[in-house]
Image (cartoon, rainbow, N blue to C red; front, side, top):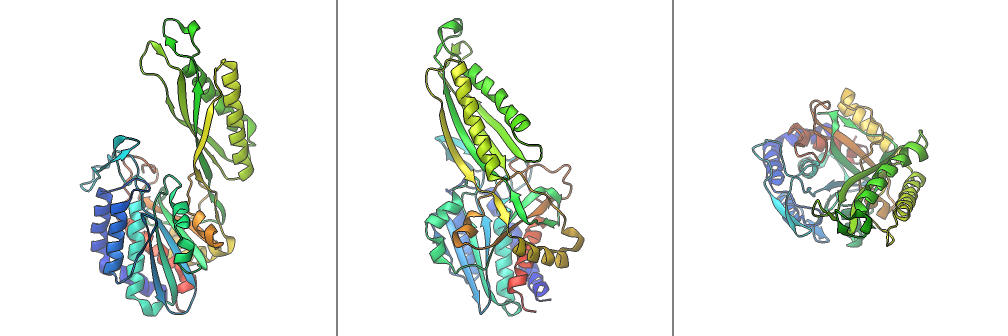
Length: 403
């Protein structure tokens, strides 16, 4: 088969791709500040004979026009996270960055470096075996996935005018939840809609020995945390999926000072727009009610950010991808359910009104012991670089490969 000819070409640059991956893993950059990463991607694309285009400050676009045929777009995200690496690898990141005025450690704790190198590998193989396929392949290296800014920023910077209309838009993510060497895709809702909420509640500061003279925002915030747990348990139908997480509470500076405010960071996940709206309405209702019950002197401040849309795979496109996965991966194409993780990928195909498919690939031999995404120990095995490149080529085959 033509796709097998293209996949065979992956062996020609494997050692160089591993070294590039290690280089990128050592030097992660935070969302929307991936300047060195974007430069390095452009260098590789130029080495391959392409003419990359910068979209916005750190987005990169490359177009391979190989004659008549469909247009397939493939996205890889490129940003790292403010996490101190504890993988123990000799190529572990020791990089730092400035975030909100503080110097923080950074690492590729979500495998975006795997995505970069997988896409570059697929590009190199397509260029090496141009006689095996026909059409246009568009590579989109997207910044800022972790903060849900990157896809929107590329669209705002003119992505739609910079590339041809895609017949299909593809994306993938390395995960610890399926075994190394496997891939998985499903039709319909796949990755949850998500939002983060910054909630500031107000009290009245006083000495810790005189609590009656103040209004304690820490007690107020604690009451809110407990009450929020009832939303999913008692307001969402058991047949629906929803998550409400309080990831941070910040208040006070000293044991004997009652502060005048507290800030909570809350995250929500849902697979249905009405459920997401219910979560947000309930959170606001509970916060305002607890503030009133605590005699808070000011209205709470509620700010939404990091909006991730629901990722919904087109049924017809996903069926083609799944058939292709079946043919190539066989028993290593495994079933998968909807995932509570979130993605901004679907913003890109939505900008073109193009059908899309997003799939996952395994990064670790044993999911039972694998560290989760965003863990300091998250380090997919090197074999996932080849699996990711193969998955891109196989998923593209129904549109691009010659019979």
